[in-house]
Image 1 (cartoon, helix red, strand yellow):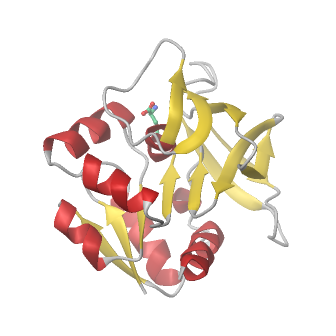
Image 2 (cartoon, rainbow, N blue to C red):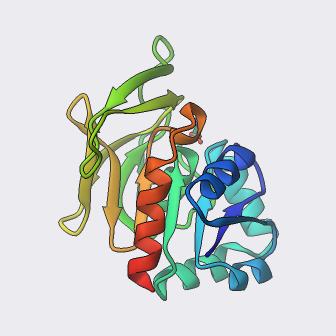
Length: 192
Ligand code: GLN
């Protein structure tokens, strides 16, 4: 199975490594045409403003949104989760967003004092805790009724799923544990 990693900016290689470790083949995507080659796409962390602008400039934003609406599974981490949210709340918006997932998110919401931290999370369906790294992470403030919360930190959702869409406010790829990527591969198989 081929899984795309959006390769415009951010931690692209780490995701590619974990997709390969989870048993699929990672393909770095930099053009809209690349979307036709893959069964699902990861939108990595980085800077949501920059990734959104590049998606727009390279003409990927609209085709990507259409593919997702047509059922292509997508997994956004951190900046990727921000871009997938239907609503970005608070002082920092994003100029270009994919806006497909029924949730409201606030950028850089943990504040400067604790803007990066690591923790062990209990994740639905996983038998042992998942080491997770939060870097200038957003907070998911609200989710719609069709969104399943797979993990929480501080009573806030940090890993959520809506149909074939998965989003985490943390980076599993930095800790190097491929189990969230396996969950994503299962979603792709389900979408079949
Ligand atoms: N702070 C970034 C943003 O708001 C996200 C950081 C990340 O992806 N680690 O876009």
